[in-house]
Length: 324
Image 1 (cartoon, rainbow, N blue to C red):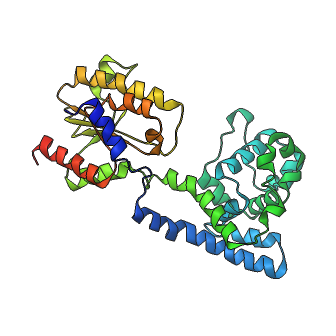
Image 2: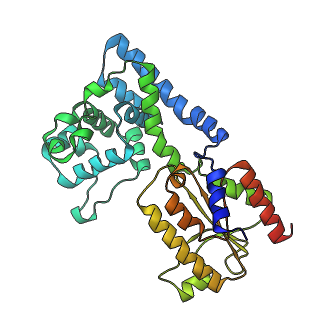
Image 3: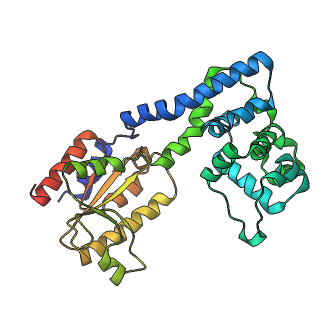
């Protein structure tokens, strides 16, 4: 078993710094970035020829990517748009209702039962309901001057709801805004996750795995247990337990995470002494928090990063453990 210093050195010397998958990046560009760019280029051409018109944006909302394109243009997140719609449904303000054409699309709701709509519902309404589309366009054009929104929204967010934000000048602006808009969506889709490489390795070796709670920890330490990322081959007789932590940013919670992993490792060694507890610890976020990193790696029997040679070493370890 490697020493803590050796495990620490592994993360320092073989750190990938920022994980990215070339195939994913190309797919994201082709399926998400380029289509939205094209929508906004076309919109820009219309605006340049005849000026800004509301009907252009209502037409854009009929496209499956239309709402995302407008949100990219004004820099408003989908989450913030949903917050605004939730607020409108709760406060039932006359002027805001009129701005949003709310009487034409509002559902009958009791105040205590109002829940936030999903992204898919907002997108579907924009496609299916002309009054909702018109209300959204009104919001994007005039929201910054609405008294109710002026009281509720931070000025930083309120200024995004202005016709001036819809003036398109240069291609670089379009591309930057689209990338800003799509960053959160790409992360939410989960396809650009470093853990996919662990799944790929397990798949190539035809090794089954579970995720979730270990039964003996649930039984003996329900208040201390935590869900496991990969339990190989299953929860009942695990031989390898893998936890993954890839951080491209730093946070105050890293120290707490390291302490938690240390406590969990002690539980695993007590209740599953035959199992190896493995950590994938990588990213610039760990690299620059070295004291937290030292505590983190001490929890594991061995530590890997997502660099190619480290993934090969992980594969070799699995082959040896499972006699493949």
